[in-house]
Length: 282
Image (cartoon, rainbow, N blue to C red):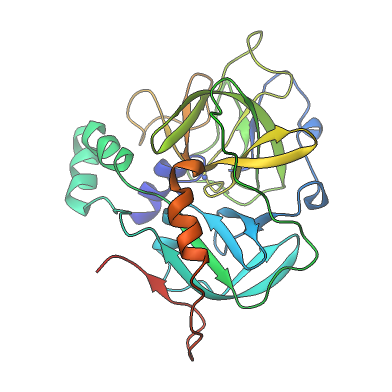
């Protein structure tokens, strides 16, 4: 059951996928090497993060919240030991009875409202700093109307059909682009448009891509405006394939959490005998 809910919430990973692409553009045009953006982090199982300071990776809370411990993340192709994982104190997991009721009735409105009110963001502190990869800065302006670069290794497919809801959620690394149509409060979002309205490399993220960055170009620098989180599908998400044209993708708006991020990073953990410490609201 947890896996089913994870797949739905991500869609971009409700755990989020490799990139879901246009039907009329060759897949090879979307593929990328990690050297093109080495600050992308791979989290165990599925999901991503992005390096925002030498010892800190930013990700979605649901990527790490279900795991008993995260011992290693991979940044730029190199594994790094984890000191601790700090989940935002106001991140909330949906109650199982809410999930069960939604599956039984097909009405996911209460579930979506619950998730939209959650602070789905977390930080991963590394034992040693990353010295050969430049951290990504947080985008400070409104991203509304901006084209964002997205990427991931999760599920892939094309906009007409979407991708299989049960994966695989680890595939080859791909990237694409989309235009932000929502940027306020906790969330930043875009719609996967079909051609001819689509961008040349229009894309959407899929299951297994949660935690991956939504990047805005500032001069020749990429800055992180959002962290991939969830997707809204039309109809019953247990029966509808994710990644189809017309679906809305949501990411955590990072600037909204700048204060929490800076405060957390400013207070390093006192390392104990444990490799990983999940810190949550009591």
